[in-house]
Length: 467
Image 1: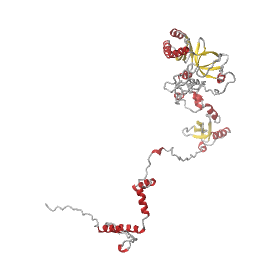
Image 2: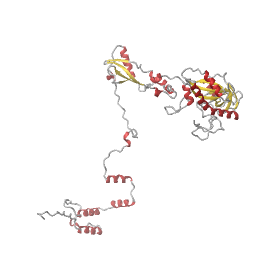
Image 3: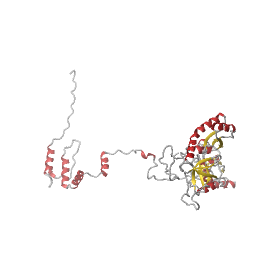
Image 4: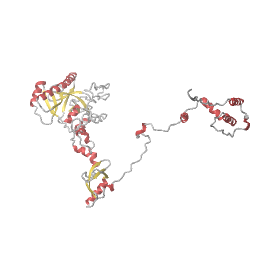
């Protein structure tokens, strides 16, 4: 598992970079373990001595115990220590120290009289022996499963834990019923040559030790922060209006998910205002029974006994009024008359994120080339040549405008076109005063040109006789 921290409780330890295999110093890093506790009293100076009287020591997986620091050793989070055990001694890592340990002991009802002692800080030889035994645990677990399968025992070896000095092996197993493992212990003692201890755990504890990813996409609650396992029954799903589907309601352990209890209290508080789901209303059109309820909208759906396909939703306050009418011995009005049609709220989507067709191209009317050019030239800055032409067009005199219209009137026109009378043209086709001579010469050249005649179509000769 990934460490996820830059430094642990030990200031001299650094986890380094994150890798797929996790922290290289996972045994000594205080933040690399599951079910860790945040020490919110770490900045508070204790009133007594600097060394803490009690410490929380974590062993393999989620096993934690509390020990008394009788020798007043300078212990902190991440310290590897040798503690008292039966027989011999065990090696563990300090997961919590300070004043918060007493609060945790009081919360978990751990008696102070039964606390064992802390012997010393672990030396190099203790750590090497401890790491070598950890490497053997996986092979021993596989071998132990084969022995149990050979004896035809209905049990499953979940985990194996070596004691720090190697004087004892603890086997954690799960079973549906009681198992007689007297012959099994003899087989284990002869194979492993050490003291054997068997501990039965539940399926939830098994998933907490193994770990995994839940259906929500996050790490299992039992292997990260959940410490107490409360019983979960199907009534929790019924109160929350969930379908009783074992495949969806079961977790990795095969039991009902623990998260069904998280929102159960809030559902129970809301359901106190609801009438009973077995309520039957006596209406003018017949009896009606409850189909379903909506906890958040505070509504109940009813249907007639004769026509159960038509559902009518009523508010819980309206249902209470109908129940009071039936208690007086009177029939309540029909459900059709009581149904209120809600007007849906019309909202305007300013950002247009809720529209399905916001990415589709709308069918618009085809635009001409002139319209497209005008739209493109709206935001575009005019070029220097265009500015010059615009300025010249602004400075044109009215005489020049009349001359230009005269040119257009003198152009040759086709037979289909009719002559258009121009009121601005003066008689005798005389040039206006102030007109440029070059423009007059150009006009004369245009008038001298011959009009364009459309060529006649050549018809093929007719066939006359035998020609």
